[in-house]
Image (cartoon, rainbow, N blue to C red; front, side):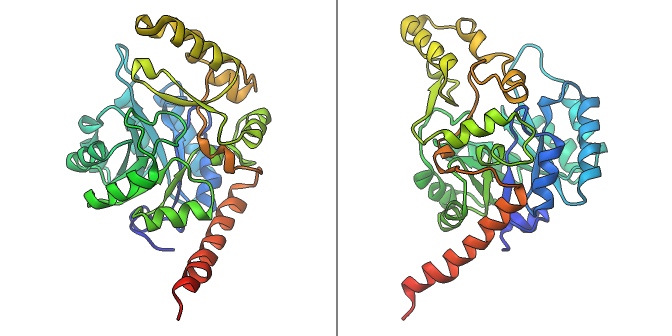
Length: 325
């Protein structure tokens, strides 16, 4: 299948693995890329620029295909060493970077001078247009269904994607609610050039997370996520658990007086304990509503091959059959 995204990134299938904290290691990124998609290493999961350089080298040893790095730009008093991370990306020969969070404009020239394509994650049309205006090569449009941070507009992809298609000139991929061939074909019909999957790729054999995490996603339904940190305008969609219920109770009881410090135990520094150790109750962890569509734990190749095979059937048999004659 050829789309503007496959041609831009030099990949076989229009499927991208999103950057995910303590999930996007070289093992998963290489498996996705070897299966014809675009694997993504999560930059800030690595403690330092040197660690990121080593992780890029590990991925390079496992695949000859294109892969990318996610860099999330965080507004904080003690920012990560972004210039160091970017140097590691450039020196490692990475040609795709998925940016997220704050405006990445100040960091774009160094990366684009090195021939790197920039895909910025956006949760609204206006942010997508801003990404286009500052020179991003593509955007990942995240609907309200997505795991992690869906923004504050609450627009689902059935509306957000065609709106993006109406406004954007650069390519974009659909993120949030993407899990199978139906997701891909629907996204293409709504104007996207591919899909970005996060939660679906956690539930794969190569995902370097604890088996309990994968089984929790398989067991969950579309009703099992919660939105936390809404009062702080930093909304995150997470899988429900005891820690999430404690967090939500704090939000209810404290009301307008809520501060980040009140919920720090439930959200700060919990990902290693959850993803690596399998302590599912350690805190809040991102998960999309798409968990309701995830019922197995295939290899990345089985997943991607199945999506592309079934997409061909949907396009060339089911849909074509509806207009034939």
